[in-house]
Length: 73
Image (tube, rainbow, N blue to C red; front, side, top):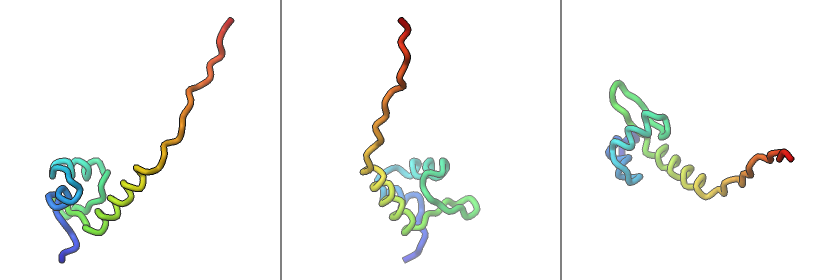
């Protein structure tokens, strides 16, 4: 099995369109490798990235409170 996969294969793995994968790579959201004009992805890195995304989605967001304003009498 080869180590690198195409955007089409990544799209199939993560369940999005090929164009979404290219957009994620362009915005440096998803790990990728550029070889000339080609954009490739390492299968093991994509699977690790998916695990990290899943773990991050399970972390509770910190509770944020509004700023306290001084009321004028």
